[in-house]
Length: 323
Ligand code: ADP
Ligand code: MG
Image (cartoon, rainbow, N blue to C red):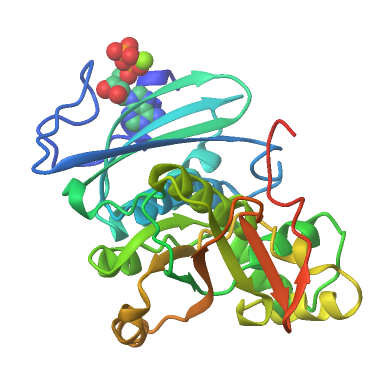
């Protein structure tokens, strides 16, 4: 199979764009402001080498959809860059199944890409639409805002550690953890419901503490204030097995630094509490109020984590590829 047959067979969906896959460039007609983001996934670095192809296809798109959720944009179009060590039909079939199942669920149109031989690597570019006034920018959190989190964090991190044999889980928990790691669910519906309610949002990809840190520093800089996120450990929903791990000595800061969950963390005025509770009920999801953003004097650290009122040090957290 040559490159063009491969593209035609696996990556040429019917498209609603003005011009989709097949020409030198695609053509789209956006009606609003465009939101654009890209992620690069490398085998052995962003997913274990033995990850099923369907999961890779899902995750490559899901992490980009999650970025659209974090911005308050509706995802519309995607471009797929693919480096493959070899052409294996069953692999391509599974990969494209994972990709397109998710794309169809969220109405995303694959309109182009590039395919080449090389170490397995997937890069998706996503384009979404929204009015720029609705953007959930990370530099727009306000002093006094509540900090909210969807779902539970830690499942994907547990899945990764279970796969490498670093921890042992019951088979039921292991299934759930591996599912969270391989098939993250982008929080698009939640995001679309909070564009008029939240000031700022971020998706939890690097780890909760690191990602909240990004919002605090961006907002502090934009508003020329000293800001601090005060998080209450006991308010942060953790998976049961992670709570057990805490009981046997895993420290709280590590538990809050597992990445890859793609839950949504957002900042909103306390006046929105009733609206947010109603959204959680309508969407049938868990939303937890885990802390508050406040103005502090210049000496205070951007993050304060307390457990039953006692401060826990958060000097080292999150994931940095170059650390
Ligand atoms: P060019 O040589 O002009 O870069 P290519 O031969 O790389 O074009 O690609 C042919 C067409 O197939 C283009 O429309 C391109 O966007 C599309 N394409 C290539 N790879 C992919 C892919 N993995 N997924 C979707 N579309 C792809
Ligand atoms: Mg090309």
